[in-house]
Length: 283
DNA sequence: AAATCCGCCAACCGCAAGACT
DNA sequence: TAGTCTTGCGGTTGGCGGATT
Image (cartoon, rainbow, N blue to C red; front, top):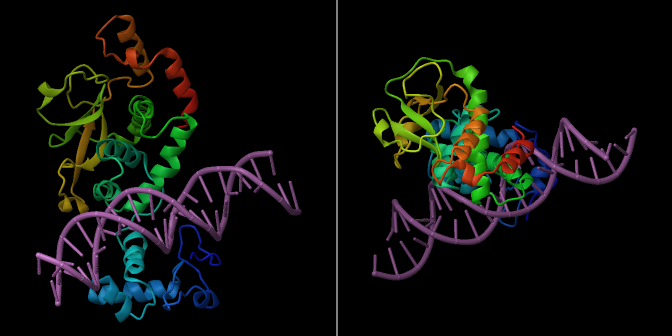
């Protein structure tokens, strides 16, 4: 049974009253629903003294009438000191889109590569923002149509917007992220021979000012990446070309008009599709 | 000004895997 | 080895509050 009669301030602590606390107990005497300031304080103080883990005993020993699960969730998603609050930045949006394209709904895995962000937060972002776009396009979020919209329209648009705030120097240890027909892909520096079908990069792959750079974990392809939880990030260079968007559209049509390879973007998207997407997607 | 809609997000649930006895 | 407990994950719910009608 859910608790309906408590108030939670957006972005702030739960503010259930003492009376509500008593109402929100189940038959086992366990509290449910929003956390009170007192409960938060108790949990934070207990963990500061005894550390994380053993959540059931935390709940008992700290005198909280909460399940271990509830204590764990409250700590990880809200009380942890390194939880980052506030809007998802453009860079983070790009990273979410990119990582989701690789791993799907592996929210915790994605969160591991975004220090300070919780899986819950990323999941909420995906459901409220990304799925909304899919709905507007009247297509399934897992459909090829929508995945292509993300690759060829949304992500380039985000990348263009992120550029002015990203004028930092090149990092030779970084990983270049190129925009491919098949979506964004990372390549370790020096692996340029392995980038067939690069689509929107500028001529050459040099680390010049025409690139966009993203802060993403330097070894984000590693499945076990506990070392990334801190601040082990490096600069990824994103080959932007001089005009990734809207000239990307031009390239699409140039390729199509030029009668290039059969798998050109033009074969995937005709002019009506592009126009439709531009109208539908609100960036 | 009131009613309704809708985005956001905290917190719940069920399930699965791993740890422990 | 089997049973139980704990932890972690992904999916879902529903209240709050701002925007719109």
